Amino acid sequence: MAVHLAQRLLMIIGVVLGVVTIMFVLSRVLAPSPAELMLGQRPSAEMTAKMNDELGLNRPLAVQYLSFIGNVLRGELGNSLLTKRPVLLEVRERFGATLELTTLAMVLVLLIGIPIGILSAVRQNSIVDNVVRTVSVAGVAIPSFILAMSLQLLFYGALGWLPLQGRVDTSILLGDPIRPITGLFLIDAPLTGNWEGFTSALAHIALPLLTLTILLLATVTRITRNMMIEVLKEEYIRTAFAYGLPKSVIYYRYALKATLIPILTVVGLTYGYLLGGAVVVESVFDWPGLGAFVVSSIAQNDYPASLGATLFLAGTYLLVNLIVDLLYAVVDPRLKT
Image 1: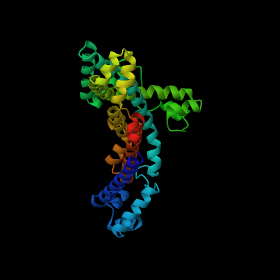
Image 2: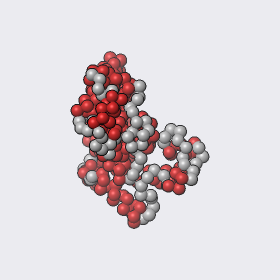
Image 3: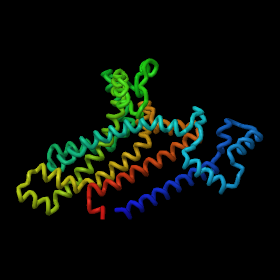
Image 4: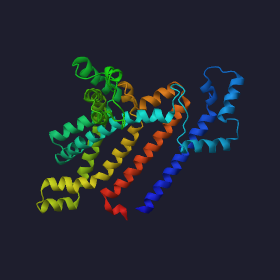
């Protein structure tokens, strides 16, 4: 296990170095240049030359590259061209919103999707199984933006139960804003005694959370069902039934354990991807997370912001993958050797 972990760490270092190198090359070969982006439209040659000198773009490429890596290691990703604030601060503020939304979605998906997948597998070809399969296929096939807007039309437009967009009411932002501690409003609001803010945050997260949960639930349910069907055909499972062990023990202790590796793989990769921002869902619901931030940065040519956010997302994704690798050994102790 130690050797495997060391190999994974070396791979992560290599991938991060590769991402940094690609971002450096793109920033130097694509037009407009960083200096032109920072100066705005149609800067004079003198202004561009002065900015290039200030940014160190006139130095040899090797020196620029080493300086670029050093800045990344120190967390110095520059300032956003739009907000004039440090990119790392912008990313950190928005990461809390994305982390809160995606973590809650993954928890709900695991709590609901795995039991439904098991139920569908043990009742293969029954009415329950057919319904689960049909709904799962529909959940995978439906575009996320259509599902998001449909839920908005139903719960906001028709029923008026839930707010349309945002993370909290404007009255909360202007009157008694939630004081950030962890960046997770559903935790920070109770910690600071802001129960009005908690209620508002809970209502605002409901629709994007429901959208993500439905989209992910279909995948986890299908994988659990398919893997359970294969495992239930194994000889040791048949032997357990022959010995008269309770079905709940067979399903949840023996069969489910054998399916956890592929489930964990899919969940881990999906979670890492979503931590980079559920772009469509965040955009539709005006959720102030990383996804919406990256989209707006790219659309408005905010070079430092898009660069810094991309590097942060790559690091986050690799970290989640490393955690998944460590969890493999917990699920299957044979992998420790």
